[in-house]
Length: 366
Image (cartoon, rainbow, N blue to C red):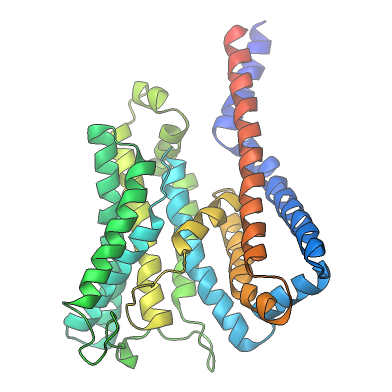
């Protein structure tokens, strides 16, 4: 009896620390979800009267068919992966961050203010702008964590509401204090070229933000799986009551997770304005914050998984217009396929949750 209970406990703890999920189901489930989403997408394309293989060829050709397309795709991958990282940091601590869109806007705003208002050598200003973007998004995320730990406010509701606050704050800024005086449109002036993020390959526009994104993923992996603070954060995410009983400061970890989540969302905004758009616009984000959730879920909230899913989602966003221009298939079908991926991932996540709950019940009944 004791041996049986010990075995069940070890199995449960293995599930708690993600070892089983990440090595087995965490690898295959996203692949199955992608396959099923493209399969259902193929049925829709057939009903429209087009060839699915030709459609997918157009989509990925629009993403990787030329140097300009590759540049556009990987610039999207950078922003998408960072907003995915924003969701993943909060998720690992048991928080649901739907606010990466707003945090991106705040990060873009803070970076733009630094570039437009802070004098100094270009390299120093760029570093300050990136730091301002991270801190601005981080403080915006910290506000959500504060509302959670102080008043018990549901972070799903507060993040969604604050997305609108961030968007209107940016609109106010680019319509007044930092508006381009020579333009009738709500936007800032184009940044001086010396303040643009440099490209990493000569002759291309693939800016060095992609290196910051890779460094952020490495930090994410080291922090969560190699550092005590990351382990505590994951324990809080799995069972906050048990974590508190074991002496882990639940409030501190939730605040830290939301600060880091917001920070990487803000960094995505900083890279977007410094490396891609080179000015702050009303629509600085093309739903990157919400698409980042798909990146995190599809990548199982792991560094390698999010990088690969970021490439897939980035390619689909980049190639969707190509599908609409050269076939009868509307780009909304590509959006449908992305949505189906999320649905199938969530179904698998629900299955894992129910299985884990059943395992926990069996352990307590032994």
